[in-house]
Length: 78
Image (tube, rainbow, N blue to C red; front, top):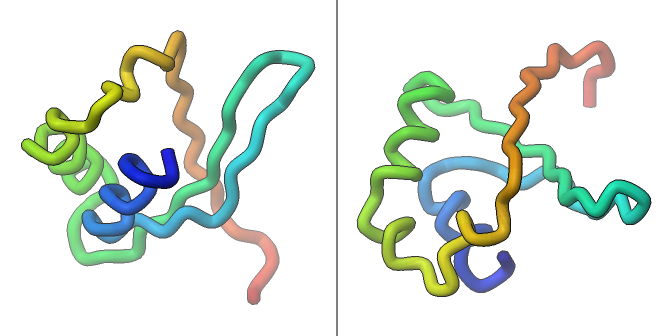
């Protein structure tokens, strides 16, 4: 995560706001943001289709049983 996925996501313009584990459910959760000019979907697709993502070793997909996406609307300003 720290040596592969995290820096690659950052290279593609994503900011990792937080990450953690829900131990009781054996789940990894992270909060990412992206405020670039392209849509989230197009930037996410570019990440997943990149040669760099394909070359990650070990392949992160081996550790993913299920993916859920939620898009949050901020209610508190920074």
